[in-house]
Picture 1 (cartoon, helix red, strand yellow):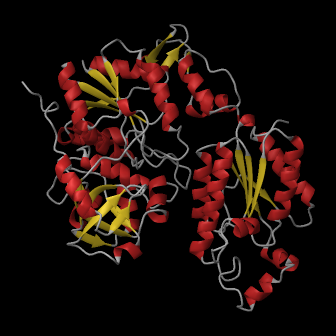
Picture 2 (tube, helix red, strand yellow):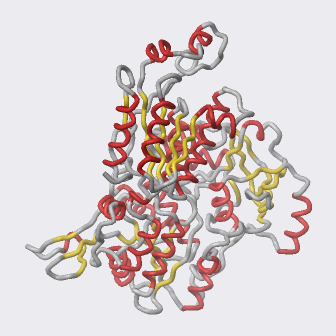
Picture 3 (cartoon, rainbow, N blue to C red):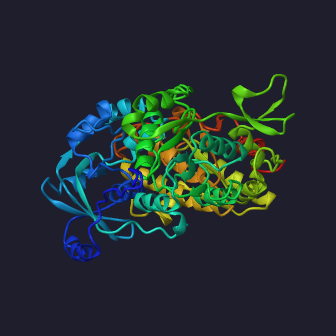
Length: 568
């Protein structure tokens, strides 16, 4: 008897013959180059991972999903899957028109038949979907500062799937996984959703979850877009592969999910459940604070730790997947084994290492005990997370024109070069404008683009183990945050706010720029006719008034030493 989770699921791809013909037609259509997040969404639309969606949401479906987690026809669906585009592109297309959707190499992946075009209320979307319009939430920040202003909706015709060059044997479509479960005779399958490396506690909890549900186990990590600062997926997949043979033979398989996470907590947990149902799973492990993004602007958790489990449990019949509670596993020293935290024998010593503590030990090159993680996993983590004093990093000075950023940056560069050990590059605002951004003006858009170019170069220097020192004005919080996220994917980002007052900057003004700005001869001048958004969480604040440059540079060195980035 064919089980529902073994039967094929509808895909949005056309046959290969039709795809060849459509490619020729699509070549003549207006085309949109998809962002990395949109490519993840399109892949799961086309291969059935987002079934029953037939394309990017139209306005009625979008409104229903945002307001009450349901499509216009009443079907449960908690996450808006939207195609956001720029206003300039939106002006060129209308409902009733077809457009080609291309990857970043220009390859045509699909055709979208536009049914709707509208400008969404993003503040409302943030409030309803993510629980707060707070840019401390990575998806809300993306919504306001990265996503296009206009949404296009409509059905999609799939021409070809996005190309992945990595871990090809580990990437399965929903139908490929369903066929595998059918072939292996697996009737019940527990999915374990993760974006972190697996340690012994995870192995223990997944093994127990599968045993309690009398099911087989699918380790189904997200390798699309996760939270800024997460361990990169190449390292994580090598860690998962190292752990696979720790499970009993023939009980467990590993498959990669190219999903762009939103970190939306309770709604995200339900969304993950629907995606796992589409991949043929019958059960899913839902953790405490499942897909939580961390702290909000007030320093509190965005979501209650059990909110995801409660919402999932309430809708699990409709989701079509049974929830397995994530039990917090702890190591009991006297028994030399793991126990659920609520089943620890009385009087026993509990050992645990938090994520923060693990990162500290990696950063400082300290021992990570075998009871906590498998040596193979620790070896992989050490390869990509060497001790901090061996990693690249970026020092990012920000402050008003004339505050002293460039002078301190130059002094710091000389001191770091004197110490030796790593190449040091100074990316000064004026020098970068000359070599990288000579065609840019001083509008907000152009200044943002200039800072992002600096950030990109700094991230490449950091990735390759060097030290980047940046000294632009960088007046906008959102742009500085975007640069931080670029750099922190590869190493430490140290923001230094040179907090010299505007009065002092004007007094020092060698180039006479403030005078020209006050006379209206320089438009959009930071601090006069354009705002400077002072950092609120800079790693270091220095005041240059009545203080010599050497002292300021020394303060930065002490901070780098305190952070473990340079040796004392």
